[in-house]
Image (cartoon, rainbow, N blue to C red; front, side, top):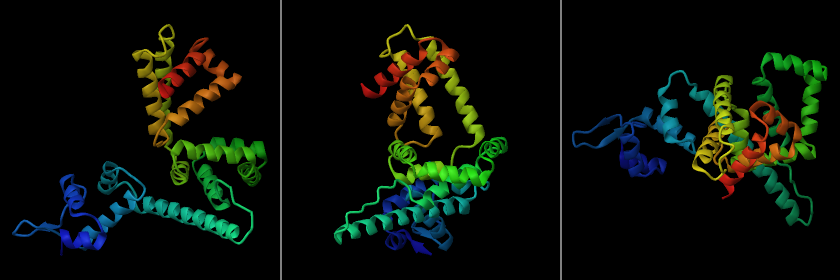
Length: 282
């Protein structure tokens, strides 16, 4: 058994943090001594190690607690995913270090690829693994087979448009690792369907307020919830850039503009774009 002080010295975690983990039932001591001191055995240290792994990826304590308590969730699978993310981060850092070394040697070549080939391959595999069977069949018909689609995907990924798309993803998520993690672990179909239903309700609600000023509380309330839905669905740290980019897409793409107007009423797209701009820029 180890005391709180010993665990703190062993792991670098403060005594206050260990006390807090006990208070919120995230990591309870194995037992308490007669004097009231918290004591931890090796199993408790294993749990603490898992907590620290999850914290490395800024996972909220509430979510970590749910993972540790839910027997259905596969902790090993989650840790494997996090391990893969660390390996990808390591590979990226090694490539950057190599590029800097080349510059220090007098070479002018610099690597500006957003994602490496291994990372893009990881994105492709994630796409395929989450692709519904009907969609996969349609892709095979369109491209003549999955091998041909893979070739098309990789060519697009390393093209100018693909690289700009990946750069935009990093802007949405705040950093490369978060963008990769969200892409590799997308929300399940049930969550997406539930979100789509709520977004449809919000758009209908917004279409009833087009006579109001975009700066009014009623309009801002709808936009705030709309943005929050996307933030939760796509695990965004801050949805502002995503929402403004979406507004720009509707403003500049006539097809998207017409589709939204046809579904929710003529003029709704322009009102929606102005409402987003008002909410996130002012």
